[in-house]
Figure 1 (tube, helix red, strand yellow):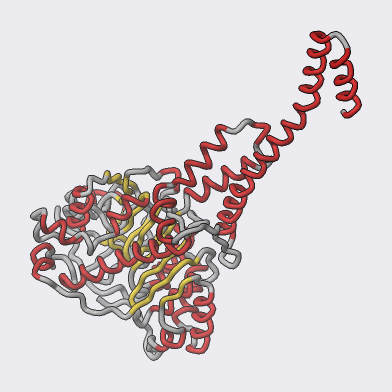
Figure 2 (cartoon, helix red, strand yellow):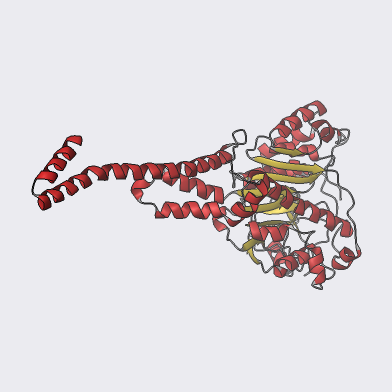
Length: 471
């Protein structure tokens, strides 16, 4: 290079000026261009390094709790949450950069960055609510047909402390145990507003029972949003279901979800919307889960004397949320007594041995009283806006006028299978020392444990008598 420039310079000064000047300029350009390209690539790599680091830090969140790392940002954490995460500024900016950059300037693994970013944007939260009264019967079905379908989802649990809370240990060994809250329930104020807005009709514990249920559901929302703030991100989808749900098939997968719409089951509407399970994006879930906070707003809109389902419908209509009906393969284990479903307004109680989707209908393990065409005719005669079980095949109905039948365990074991039957038996016969050991191990697997110690949870249970269902 130096020799060429010296030659060019000497001839340019003392040779034929025009011709040699052109040759000199051409030589300089040929020599300089490769260095300019290298410099441009260096700048591009320096720009991509922080982007790549950000993506890698996000990917660690998906791989496991023990290696969870978060990108470091300057400034107040709350301002980051409000401005960057809520507006998705990082998401949009990184995608526009990738689309605009020339192919030769991208790092070799830029496609990996986009994949990780998409995974980060599609994160799912699953929240389970309710008491563990029958969790030895429902827990493993939730694991198989809900948690395994959304295997990478973060799990949240909001439940009251009672003598059955030790049964939640069935979730032990699950990945992504995010946050759990088991609390001692207290009586919630039954204000005049709440008495006028709600009705105790159909609620076995009256208005207080409704308020306790709403508190459980809204507590899910708080667990999730607190976790989002801690880790500076937002979930794309939120699934909320009850711990007393018995699943006989998989929950709708992520491909069936739609932004701007909230998925609920057919049937069991009781004048409103079925509120026993729901799936939606973050905004629709915010409305669906804020069951206590939205009561004053609905009251001011002149709603009165609403049961849980009608109140849920009012919530969604008031916020102009689209609700989509889907078939759901689950039912709610119930210990209540119901008359024979021989009229339009009755509440049917399905057998857990039913084959089709039960859409959150009430159920119990039983020897079916009605099945086949007879059961189908009974269901089709029910009012579609009330106790109808929704579209289903293979429906079997129980006689729910009395307590669970004497040998209900046999009916359960036959429907659930030998594996679930064995676990049911071992859990209910678990010695106190083993309970404390297993619950303590379970506690260590949660990132956030807001619950009593394993001793308290296990001692809450009276081992002298088996806790089998009573009305």
